[in-house]
Image 1: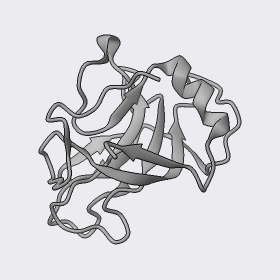
Image 2: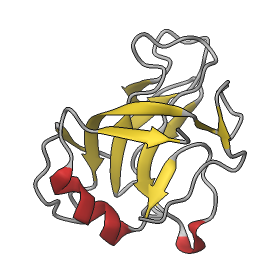
Image 3: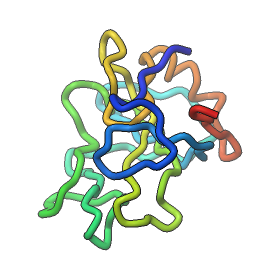
Length: 148
């Protein structure tokens, strides 16, 4: 399946804000989805229905770094509820989360691609139809291999 990767390519030494997709074998944690926009096919991964106040903390100095948070949030964060459709379906990838290391990068997701497969900020992005076709095949032992 074609995909879009980070604007800075694939890097082994991933850092917060560098725009790179990490060179790694990534476990799949859970699926986040906009239930108001689509009905998901079954998947073997845990599922979280997003709400308008769902955010992801990307502030390296915060104790909640690289973790989901809810609004209001006064530190740097990313909205999980987006109007552009990119996060209608998100597979949370296990990057720098066990435990998070300050500045090593946060929020590496597999999400819906922009038209034309424009680069991401470090995530992996697929066409919506490919994502929906892939979801039933994913489970707790599935891994995403990037650049290896």
